[in-house]
Length: 111
Ligand code: 5GP
Ligand code: ZN
Image (tube, rainbow, N blue to C red; front, side):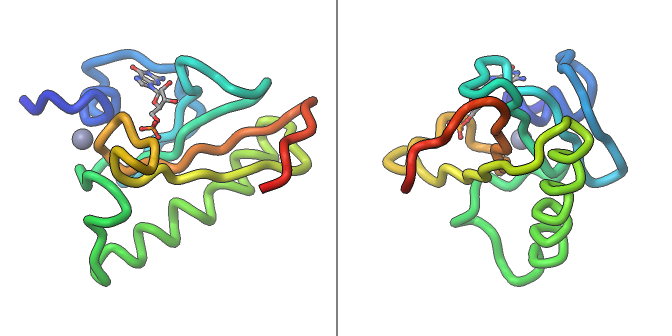
């Protein structure tokens, strides 16, 4: 059994507030939300981060991204922000690829 927290969530070994699941992907609310709605879209395949992706991951990456607007709409968001922290200096703390999606009732700072 891997020590990876998101692998454990993907396998159901650790509970999460799940909003979507299929054979390749799971999405669940972030445990420390930074906006009224804040969820994570996570591949079940363990890939440490975006820098570890190769062309063979292209289809999966596309699927993760395409889920963002669909799940955001289901969560009641009419707009949202996506974020992929990559590497320690990129703010990544969990080294299993994930897309943050957040929004709702706040005006996000311009970046
Ligand atoms: P990162 O900084 O790696 O991009 O983001 C990791 C995110 O995962 C953080 O926003 C953190 O709050 C969230 N997180 C860490 N552990 C857990 C957990 O056990 N359950 C859930 N739902 N979120 C988690
Ligand atoms: Zn993992």
